[in-house]
Length: 142
Image (tube, rainbow, N blue to C red; front, side, top):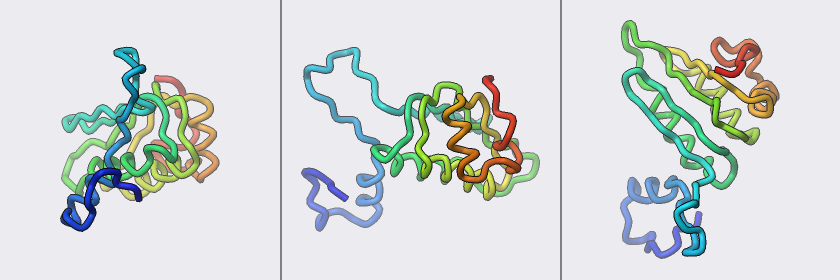
């Protein structure tokens, strides 16, 4: 993992994890105000919702995994399932789709993915989403 200007010997383990999983956000001065990051994640806690915008791939997947882990939560009575709004997710590579399927299988309150575009739905099906409650087979546009 490249940490750029960080001296890895001076950082605690927890800090290394935060730095290593930070989403890439560097852009050149020529990008101007029109620059939009490749992927954005907008999170709410009540209700538990994660809105994905853009693409999830190798360049930003390491930041995506900890967010899913934090969102899946712990078992609570009457807790609603985690909702992933994928209506603005234009691309998810196979490993990112696998993260979503594993989260759906292990989230204590469950997980529901809504609004998948055809390419994202295909990636999810390719990693075994069909038959996983809330994620396989019926993710039409929201």
